Length: 155
Image 1: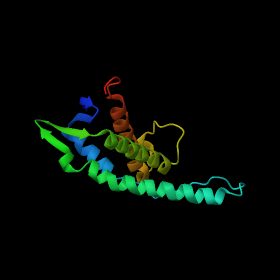
Image 2: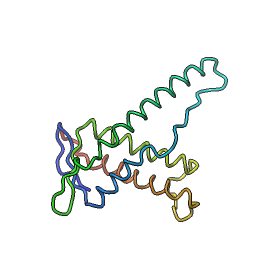
Image 3: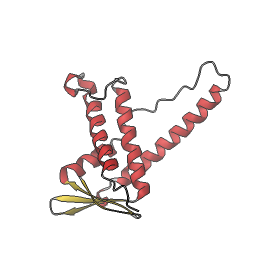
């Protein structure tokens, strides 16, 4: 994957056919786990109301990301050119894609039991958790690429 062009209107990436296929499949997996409500505090008297508001907000945000996920990687977004695909994202779409990739990575990490090290050897995982190890690694790779291919001084 490489950044072909970056401007105020967005980002143009060149992906191999396999990279484009993996990105589409990965984003279409979102969300990969059921929503887990957060707990603020058991001793704070106002915590129940804050927990409710936070969880409602998180659920709404997650629903919005799920709605946007399919549109971000629909087939029409990838233009075939020779042996690769050209993929354009405007700045808002790029930010949404990064949020989705991060959510996939974090959800996978949680499904793996929140290991201290992210260097999880998928061959040492129980069969039912291998998928989460793979998703965590693939999402992390794409997240890294999208963040590090950016031209620092571009408009």
